[in-house]
Amino acid sequence: MQEQIYVLYLNQVQEVIAWRCLHTGTMKEVLLDKRLLFGFAYGCMAAGIILPHNHPSGILNPSAADYTITKDIAAAAKLLDIRFLDHLIVSSTDYYSLRLDFVTNSETA
Image (cartoon, rainbow, N blue to C red; front, side, top):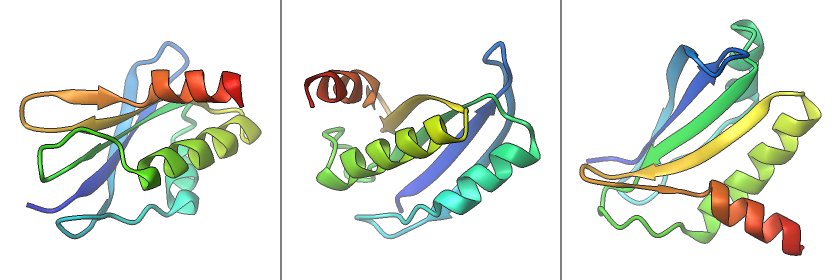
């Protein structure tokens, strides 16, 4: 199994209007092209995004890279006036939301 990163594009009332697999990586990591993510967001006139990706190991703990991606996407989304609703790590049985971690870390920074 490989790590994959997806994006869900949402309209103003937070209904999914489109989704896309942005990249399939290795067993340990996946690349994220922010230009691709936000280019598609503009193409479908998305008002919001949710960014899920898997950890093939099944371990839901976020990595340092997961936190960096979350921070970078949140900053870009804010600049582009697109709501960044969550970054999720998913496994076959559970998920982890970075939203609360990011909100808490942003407020203390």
